[in-house]
Image (cartoon, rainbow, N blue to C red; front, side):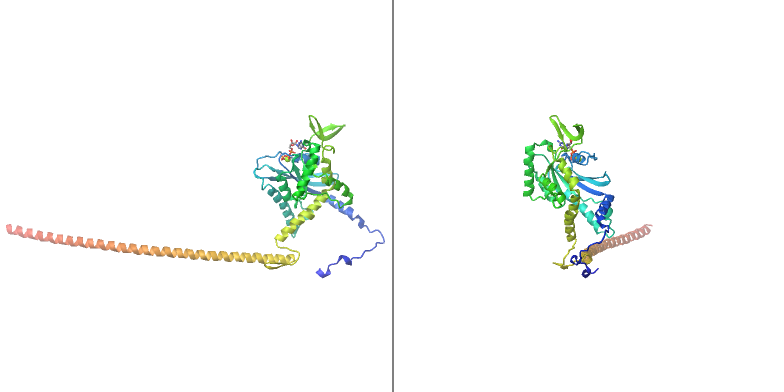
Length: 417
Ligand code: GTP
Ligand code: MG
């Protein structure tokens, strides 16, 4: 369809139906289809070794994921992803938990954020790659983009570490960050209150954007607004269950008492679960796609030379359409190749000339040496010839002398007789 044929929204007229048609079932159709397809959700757990990442994941999903304690002595941070198929009622969830290994264990922490950013970008790149394919299958594509990053803050009661601020700042435009205070049972109520305020003020001063639960949908606006004021959630995780009031509950037992994970007077675990899983999981997925991936996609396509509007660059006008951009890129690539080919050819010619000159020089030297040897050989031959001649002369003279002496002695013998 030509651009002029595109229907403008203003041209659409409202129209009343005279009877039931049935497209009011569209939302149900959508729900059924989504349920049938299943969902996927990917969580990145970022926090220092042994801070309680795996235990919190087990507690959140009420299961026991396979996890082994990480080593402290890796030279750099690594990310380890595990995908699980979960089912609740008839809803299937493909959950990927990406764990940071050896986060914060290095003496030089300058590049700690890099493998994490690289991992997130790699998932975006894979999705973009699929999206740009001619035969794309986004329908059954295993989306590995990180929907949320649970950032585990150590319960120091003091302030954020430089590593926390730098890492969160590097990630905040790429992923929905939900900061949590880990092992919150180790901090007193009064300290926690101050700690939360300190964390929030430090995040704000350093311009770190964390995920805010959305307040534009009125069904969840109130609860989300309230919960936004409780961030960062102070969480406690546990794999152990304790019987309290005839009910088995997740808890941590100490000599002085029991911390119940799901007791809102003890910690914010329930708030986190409510916000992360029960209320905003879809928003986290949507924000990942519409905000973070969109930003990544825009930057990546701009880097590749695509643009929505014709704009002037040093090399002329940048075209709008994909095919024009592709053609322009192809031409640029070809001319770059030709340039490099020409450069290589010239380098080759120069090298050949240099080699030729070197060979000529060597040949000249060889000739000179040959001439010198020939001359030396001639002189030596002449000397030998001279000596030979002299020797022959001497031999002839000797022979003559010998013959003369022989004839003289013969004559002398005859005379005596
Ligand atoms: P790595 O994967 O090895 O980096 O550790 P992790 O961050 O997954 O920690 P993990 O869940 O393995 O817990 C480490 C230790 O902390 C275990 O002994 C847990 O029992 C304990 N732990 C976990 N959560 C809490 C918590 O909320 N409070 C307290 N006090 N201890 C906890
Ligand atoms: Mg772990």
